[in-house]
Image 1 (tube, rainbow, N blue to C red):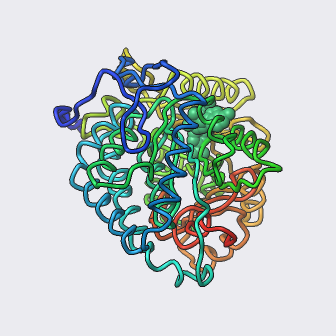
Image 2 (image 1 turned 45 degrees about the horizontal axis):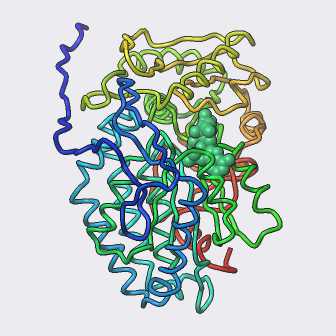
Length: 480
Ligand code: NAI
Ligand code: MG
């Protein structure tokens, strides 16, 4: 077969207007940080600086918490629920209207392909606001008590892999349930959160209901330790999740923690192999593998191992890595130099522990941070690449002989966020799902998200659920 000719199809960046520097969003206004400090945010596909971002210190966080407290006590907490819902609908509609702007900005700041920010991230963001807008005036019918009450001021700390989507997962349920918010985006991806601050202004959201403070770990820690915060909602590494759990122990603060994962994607020998191969690719290479629920451990039944691997390599050879703004790109840039270093360190451990590496032969751009789609075969349970979250486009392949062995291997992990199962038998799906210790289990598909379905994990994958009716309870006192 001759190769298809390929012409790039670049998305224009003219729709976004990136300022030289960005202030904090406190009490409905953009204000200079008391710290007086700024840090750069870069485009990981080029390594070039996009803008300077305010670095909030404890004093800035204090002002944001005060604004959130006032807004809660004087406006938002007293507002009839149906009125709150109207603001959420308005935000959802504005997000849809400005979807292209958000998608392009997300791709520039994060490095993810425009195809994903445009078709997955931003549509899901709007869907989360629409879904929660509908709940605002129906909370007493959600089976969470007759008159469920918000916590008050919620501190929210989010990661860089789905910057706007994680903001939506946090902000939409918090506002729908009547809380006010101090949110910190990740330090490498603050730009869309700051554009969201503009959307709050555009929607006429009362001042102080949403406050956005930018900065790194120290800013996050100032939120976690602030006495005026009633609840913490965090998504990120298990390491920081543990720090937060320790910091709030002995306080009245409540927390939801959405942490790491090392999901098993189980392929039984009766599965539709071509479809399973698509699911394997989607499971680990979506968003460069920067996905907490990524299907990063492939468990394939031994008798179909060679066939699956052969087809997987052919399919992987068609993955296009490169400019995230190109509409044909499947794999964009790794989000940061630090993340690339972590991927390299763990894959080097894969080599030294004796697994076999295979990467797609592809051209790597000369600037920015990149890692080719990679699989390791001959992986054993004890290898670091089978146990630790790599958070990159790297798949570890293990085999099993019996369904029982698949379950034992799948559950032999400190995590328990998600899993996949591929078989043509419905009964086998149900049997497998009932034995897996994972919060989300996909059958004959992978990485499907819906605001109505709860998401969250067991063990070191975290505490609590986000999304659906379960996610509401995490923002209502005494109901979780
Ligand atoms: P991280 O957990 O350090 O960062 C997540 C958020 O927490 C960021 O907003 C960060 O500024 C903030 N933060 C950092 N230290 C903090 C502290 N002491 N107190 C409060 N907030 C703090 O994650 P990082 O360093 O960016 O990535 C490291 C690894 O974590 C990744 O390689 C990946 O394995 C995992 N990770 C998992 C995510 C998930 O969705 N499960 C998301 C991001 C990272
Ligand atoms: Mg960190």
